[in-house]
Image 1: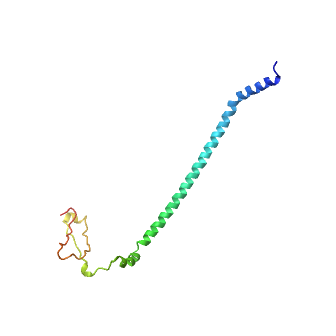
Image 2: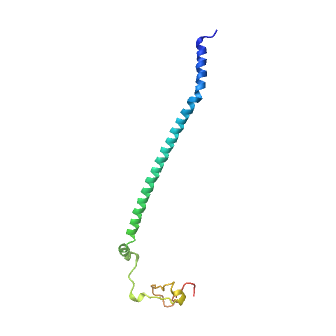
Image 3: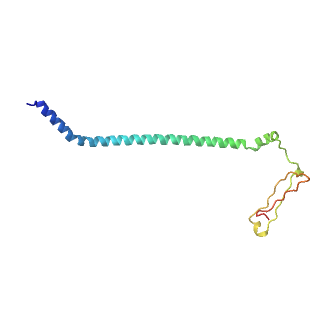
Length: 134
């Protein structure tokens, strides 16, 4: 003969199995919602970190551009020129070369001027030509 407790235990098990899908659906929905919310928080944190890095990199770029502008000032270059062996040119060392251009092209091309260092006596002077090799 079976005990009354065995029958009630089986009934509880069968009742649990009947209600398990009913309870699993809302709990799985809550679990999925929680997981999605955590993913959103993680992505927001990563986006905030990347934004911070972008701002930091931008400020570093601005600082480096300011430093480059400082290093390229004429006063600084003029101060370093003697150390590099650079001197002011004499008036006789400067030659102005003008380029004669045909009339139709003259409206598009402005004649240029350039300075030239003295050339050795036995070397042929270089001659500037207009664009196109004429």
